[in-house]
Amino acid sequence: SFLQVVGDFGGIHKSTASRKIYMVQEAIAQLAQHFVRMPRTEAEVTNVRKGFFNIAKLPRCVGALDCTHVKIQSPGGIDAESYRNRKGFFSDNVQAICSSDLKFQDIVCRWPGSAHDSNIFRNSRVRNDFENGVYGDNLLVADSCYAIKPYVITPLLNPHTRAALTLPRAIRR
Image 1 (tube, one colour):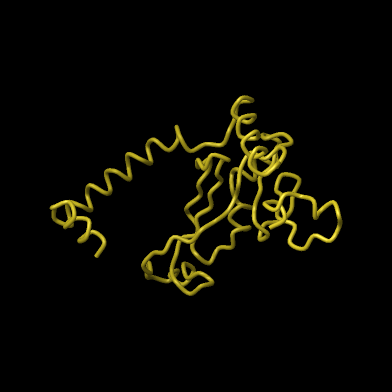
Image 2 (cartoon, one colour):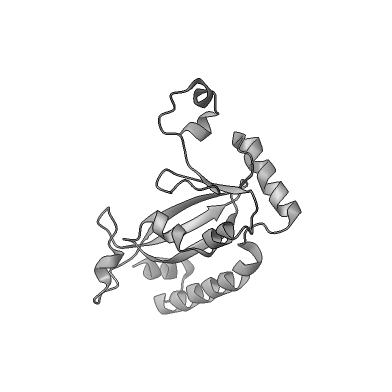
């Protein structure tokens, strides 16, 4: 029905809309390697770190990590149920890392909806790069479903010390 709506909006048949959407998607995918990438140079890393520090006083942070479910129709077949997520609908679980200025730095979109966020990260190239020291002492900020690592910090859910209570609210969440 989405293709029918797009076709009607553009005054074209839904099969033409399908072909055009595919062409645009392919063009975007070709450009992704130039625009969707983790910071590598010292200048890029410094710029991203400054951005996170200016927003929430997060030192050494080079990215914000999280996953989201993109709703899909049941793919059918023997593995269809692996795409059913914990909320009961079929989805792809897509991991993204963003910079302080909301630009995508890394996207992983090959996991079914039943995959846990931390498992996707555990099997990612970026985690491997952090483990191998590619990003030095830099780190990612993530939500509480991720394991705390030297390169992943998560929110303090129930801070009880005076030092923890003086942290910026964005960190305590």
